[in-house]
Length: 309
Image 1 (cartoon, one colour):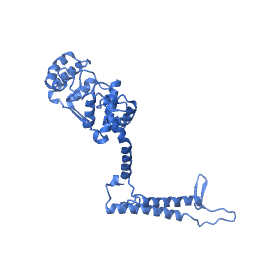
Image 2: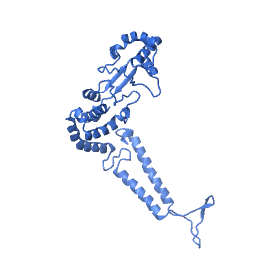
Image 3: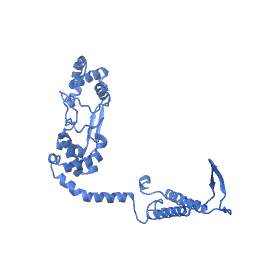
Image 4: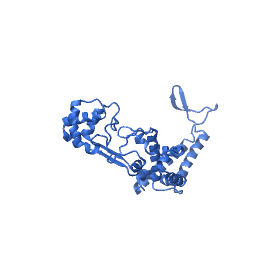
């Protein structure tokens, strides 16, 4: 209830919930008691009159509820009232047990921290290259990865549209242990500005030149014209040869790996879209969410993926 309404309800809404809840239970009890008995008396042969309702030739007898069925309904009402006394369910009333979902969550987290913190602390003392070779540690790290990283990078860590593949050797900010740790601890913010001001012709020439850098099919004449534009506006980040700059997170344009290439999309169309509209990439810092000890394990896991490929 707290998650839906905040820390507490106003007096009106608390009373409203109490009235609706208890009123519904009272109505159910009235219906139950009203149908406990029938005023129909069996005849000499034990037959009871019907209610007059019939469907497909089947008539409805006016019999009371079976005793066991009635008792089961009574137990249900007793259980509901007992639950509402013990646990929150009536507006701001917290229940005599004082239970809350937040409190239970905090208790379970505390138990988990008490159990696992010494294990994570032990792993944190091991250098990442050495830790990446520990199969047991990597099983633990993989579970942390699946819970926190797979939603973007995929369960197989091969990324997706706008999310880097962690299993190859193409790393925007470097794939060494210290680079991976910095990324996980602090996050990254990548920015590729839009270059619409260059005009359509220059954007097309520049597209053809970038295609030529990775030996993609391109127009040779337009690529030659685009080279000067590349040197003037792109080389500062991507380097004169287009091999990128890990200090800036500028991608390598020569390896035929494209972060924003949608399935079925032509490489040239992706480049044009990038040049016209720019790109914004954000990798959130993970240390604040999972702690530095788990970050260390995940860094070792990601580093192991790089070594495996």
